[in-house]
Structure formats: C-alpha cells, structure tokens
Image 1 (cartoon, rainbow over the protein chains, first blue to last red):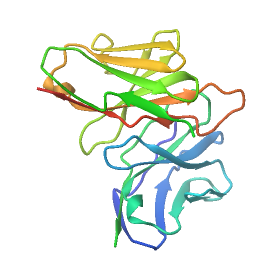
Image 2 (image 1 turned 135 degrees about the horizontal axis):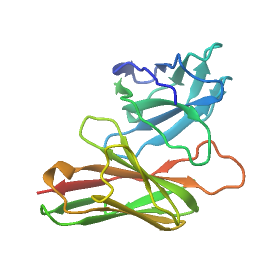
Image 3 (image 1 turned 45 degrees about the horizontal axis):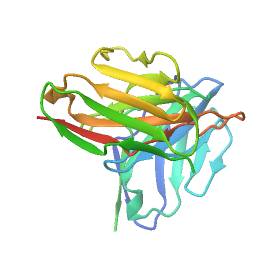
Image 4 (image 1 turned 90 degrees about the vertical axis):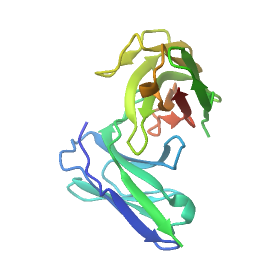
Length: 111
Length: 119
C-alpha cells in the first residue's frame, strides 16, 4: 500500500472549515484514499473514502487532485468535538484488507 | 450502524498473569477481525489479522505465543496476552470486517479499545 505524508498538527477555529492535507505521491491506480479519525482514548472512526472523484457525506468532503497524488479532507464547520487525530490511509479496497496507520494529523479545534 | 464491542474496557493485572480481551461484532457477522496495539502518543500498530475458523496471521515482530488469538465464531474474536509484563501495558483495539455480499468500502468497524495496565 502507498505511503502517506500528513502534517503533524493543525489548529482550527471553531465554526471554520478545517482543511487537512495528505500527500500520497506513490498511489497506484487501484488504491483508494481513506480517512479515519481517533478521538482521545477511543477506537478509530471511519470518515470518508474516495478513488478519484471528490466525495461528500454528512461528516466531511474529500477532494482528490487530478493526478491523485494528494488529497484534502474538509470538515466544513469544525466543532470542539472534531478535535482528534486524523489518519489518511491509501490502500486497495477489499472486504478483508488491513489498514496500516501512519502518524496522522492532530487537529485541535479552538473556541 | 455496525457496532463492535470490547470487554473489558480496562484491566489491571499483576506481572506474569494472562489477560483475555474479547472483541464482538454486535449486529453483523465478521469474517475477519484485526487487532491493534497503541502506546501513548503513538499511532495504532497492527498486531494480527484474525480469520474465523483459521489461524491468525501475525505481523512481523509480534510474538505468536505471547499474543494468542482465537476467532471461534463470526461474531467473536479473543486476544489473550500471556504472561503479561509491564511493557505489555497498552491500549488494545480490535476492528471487524463484515461478511457482506456486496462490497462495502467502509469495511472495518472499530471497537472502543481495552486499556491494559500490567503492574
């Protein structure tokens, strides 16, 4: 699975959009971009995934560049409860594939 | 939505004893479950992949005889930390992958984790 690079930490003001970048320059054509987050002392939570088109759900939007070498997770209106570590993972989609977590980005939403 | 539970949520044990952690998929059947370990301020590290009815596949560097995994049914996997020592103190998290006919891309659901402290 392709390796990802994320900033170690980011701050965001409550109510503003949080834009979390992820670089995955070695991504293969059949690999998806997944985003998970982990709130302190809890299990990770799935946020969104995509292949090459932009995706949106009730939690976030995922913008993938045309060359697929990077992506951005957007939380449109960040709240204090969005404070968490956000993980960008690139892998082939399958029913049994394992997830390899990198260091992720610690997002601190401030009042 | 799919729910995965873990029991216990936290456990404290003496050095040398064994501890069993249960991971259950409550409203779906899971052909595959994964076990992760997380030390403070670090990321999740995959320990092993557990398939129902077969032996677990361990990641490099994880001792099979120390971390015993049993996946006896489609809703239950257990991790036993044998002869636990203080360095085994960690946050253990499981995830479950559903058995579905149609591909579901959000195919892993995580449990809330078990905090193990070995004295």
